Image 1: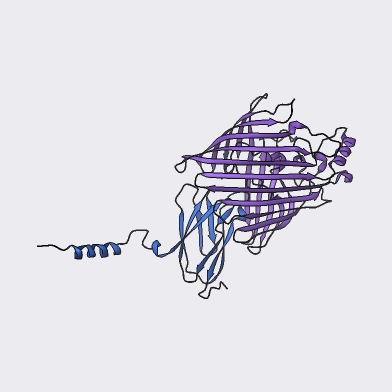
Image 2: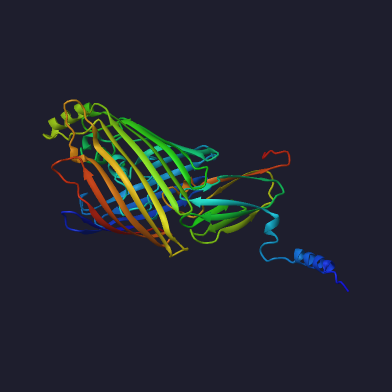
Length: 127
Length: 337
């Protein structure tokens, strides 16, 4: 008798699709934005997301440890070059412009390290 | 912090604790910030600059208004060149700073000033300051305008100077900038208040293991003939100051070991051309020993991204048939925290 494997394969595929993989299942549903910190700039220094959207910021440094602070939202240390990026989930936020900056003194031009997170409403405005 | 061993041809080798730097910061509010940088050079201060000096390189207040427009006042770094505002030892290759950033652009160049800075979007940013001028009475043939920095020490402010820089940092790894500084110099002798202008352009790009850098700088000194004659009348010696100084360099570096923290080695080679007698005023001949170029090659080991163990060799030449430019072997230890 010829045995069909089709039902078994279908069951395996369904099973695998629903097994959560630690640290990845949630992240895969969010947009990832890589931000590079380097004396004395963030690149990009302007990040735009939609209201209601949560994004994962992958913060990596090309040199020393930097800070990443959005007042009232996040304040974290970006590890030095050679380490894994710091992943910070930001949002959902109400529309507006949120300044971010380096919060850890990183050298003579530390105060130049600033940027802006723009949260657009559904009409595309940031208020 | 920078500790150096310099073995220069035809001279005794020296060990010099070149720079010990303390940085202070304070936030009065989220919009009013203070930054200070105090530097001790050559370890000991005994009243003469030849022994050592303490420099207040930065001490300013930032008034943060908008992303595009902020005000700054106090002792500020001139926004000129690749090194002046970004001079922590782990971020540049070579034990000593590039020659161009020493004798053409007088790094570390700081003076009291007031100005604005900001980022206008898409990676474009700027700074512009009104500052105290240079003292042309201290200019020289070999080091150009370097000794004319007043450094905020009872600085004569008869003639304000202006300086500015526009910069693009919108692409990861790329920085492209252009800077300018201009002002009439000031000294005890008003008749030598000559105009001095500095124009500079630079670029820096790194991707994966490779980094490339280049810088070009040009200094013009107005009425240098009158400046030389006036100083000769005062001191008995003409400083033979040029009416134009020029320098440029290109550098390539490659991270030969990039296996993470403590397994991190960069090798580099740099060619520099720097002439502090580039164009002379009528009636003055250039001193050819100050028309120089140099090859610098070496390596930096980073046991930590903030700690740099450096080694290099400098082959230096000049255009003089009589005076030889010295080569040197250098070892440095630099760190920052």
